Image: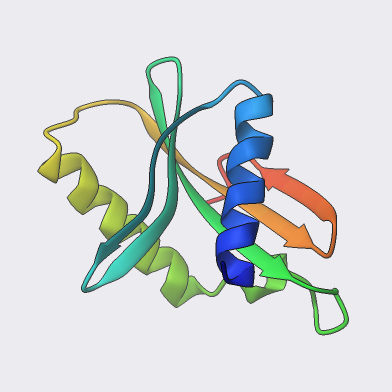
Length: 108
């Protein structure tokens, strides 16, 4: 298991402990990827997981670029269309720096 996969597993378990339900992981399209798809009641949550072993070079949150946000948004839009979902949704970020987890709800 790669560090990225370990971080996604850690993020998934953390979000489940916060009351979210797991739907799917590593949804890939040619134009973008969704790390985690979760649900909270009727709301669907598309989660970007960022991991850095330390925050020496700005940390996990600084690793999220505008281009990457655009790719995640496009992938989520495609996911909703593909699954014929007309539901409220949001984009969260789980940033993991070493062992510290930061969950940003409705991050972008």
